[in-house]
Image (cartoon, rainbow, N blue to C red; front, side, top):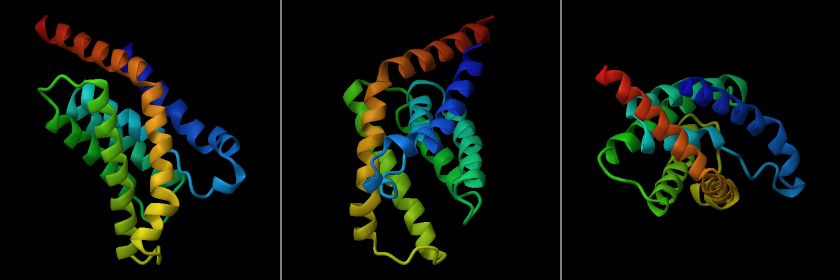
Amino acid sequence: MSMNRILLLMFLLFIIEGTVMSWIIPAGFGHRIIPHFVFVIVIFSGLYSRRHLALLLGICFGMLQDIVYFGHLLGTNAFIMGLMGYFTGVLLERRRSTIMMAISVIGFACLLYDSVIFFIYSVFRITHESYAWALIDHILPSLFLQLAFALACYVPARKLFEGQSKTNAEKDEE
């Protein structure tokens, strides 16, 4: 039942990213702030659950984002989102993650996610701006939105993913 909740939550966040957030974000910042709430949940799954679950969720919802929102190159968001979730799970697999560690890991992952997408788009000449401009224009403003979202949903996401991993551990023991 918990996996169904996770998928439903992520699908709802995917819908909110594209619909409701365009109304909430002020008109002057509409093209500058890009919400990545699904990516934050993928990182939470890497932190507090299994790394393979984070990889699977990242690839599935990243491909969904590629198809619906970013049609320039299919697979970039899926590849990077899955890879970042997997590496988060590998790096912090044995450690107990505190709130400061989780927020800093999510901040670094969001910064790296947007930077890698920018560099891939610049390699294929989809974007022609400099990295400094992209960093100031949309990467850092989006980073603050992701950090605020991660801080707001830290406790529920932690309980959801730790409860899901405990349920799987109990099933493995049987």
